[in-house]
Image (cartoon, rainbow, N blue to C red; front, top):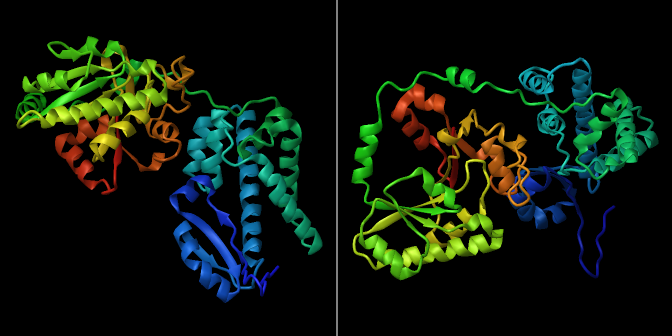
Length: 427
């Protein structure tokens, strides 16, 4: 429909999008726009800002929606096919996590398979795109193909699959939950259990240690470092792993000036923020950082670096405390996330953090600090609500440390893109 009201001078652009909420927030949508040349001229700059790819579809208003309809046909069929494939694999008795890994590195993969199958094996149907959307979209496709006398066998069968899922009460779940239709029919769950790994076997599988002992070089660099390390500890247990380090339980400016005047290499401030709400913890960290900044200016030739100590089971106010510190101290080159704790048996290997697998523990189910991801890069995305996507989080692995040594780590750090802030996971 073309709407051009002479009195109001309204112009209509048909501009459906693809990419979801995350890509919309990043301005990287794919937009399929159609309309009159005049209408597109008036809206082009806005659509360009919202999109990574902007397609101008000839044919007037409605042409963009036709392209979107074809896209939704493919997307809906691909998700349904992914569900069918994973359900078939589960019925064959295959390890569905291994199956997913194999398929993503084989010719049968698709973008939708790689994006939705993890929801199926994790049994996580948090609605990023609801199943009922495909009830609607494939319903439109079915009506259109009927009116144009075009037999679309796969699209109409997929539509029936989504209808069955919606009828079963799963319409508001993520569209990957369409796999539950197959689970109900076969009685076999697609959810894949993570393998139980032997710590000894995993550690033996790692490369040999770097032959040069870096301890002396590390000590030398520490001696030459002019910045005082200030550790804001969110729980009293953190101080149990250090010795000969002063711990402050108050943070007024006078106390901090006195501490900086001693020119220590390091001192702890016991914030106990883990016992506070998110908002109160962030406010407290901001107040402490303001006092640190003021106290530092009162002592000649002193500078400092802040470390936020959380828990090696990934409990703590992340990213709230980090955001609060940045709001006072300014942007940092990177956030370095390192929950490894040898004495407690907490290892990070291949980006996965193990307590046991951390998400399988009671810590992951904590009412205040719960999480679903044990992969640290995905954990960062989860805890930041998508603000920092997993794909943008860099890793410094033990394989790199042991096979390439300090120079390889340096090269890795220098090769990272120069963005406002990088997140690094050490594992």
